[in-house]
Image (cartoon, rainbow, N blue to C red; front, top):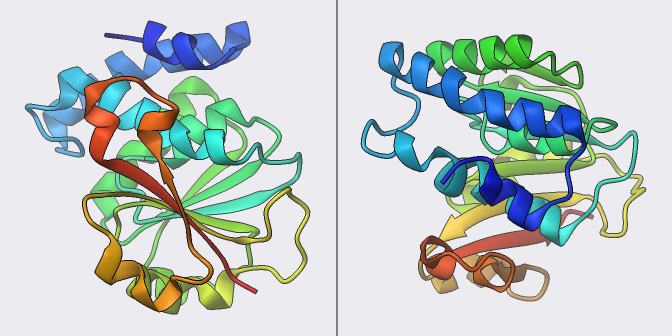
Length: 208
């Protein structure tokens, strides 16, 4: 299933639709050179990668001017799909693997995404502050919190306080034990009907 899967859950402008359509050829082509998505999984690009990334948008509609860093972005997930959906929000994609950041950078250029930047760097070295950190199973929550706490801006502008929005799967009981009072876990299957999402979750953790 292609871009119609995104149309099923989101109302897109013609430009957003064009950009989402363009991702298929771009990622298919780049994935033949640099393996950013499992070769077996590239046919599931829209469901397993693009729509999955956009689950974050179901939890929070980012206000204009919001700044977001995507930690361990790889080939650009969840950052690039979110940047297409929120053109007035600034996204900064970070990964320590240069060839994956190169793919993300080329995709961004190809679709003319001017609200999205990339940086080949370890997150430990990033000094800038952002309203939100997003990630997709980049690392266990305690490690992620330790890594990015310094980068969360103090002043909040959105409906949710600044913090972390991370896509996860499986049993999170032990991982979230240290944050049980503050973490909010959303079952993505409440938003998206496809069986793939039955075990997928989005975790929001405010960082005050």
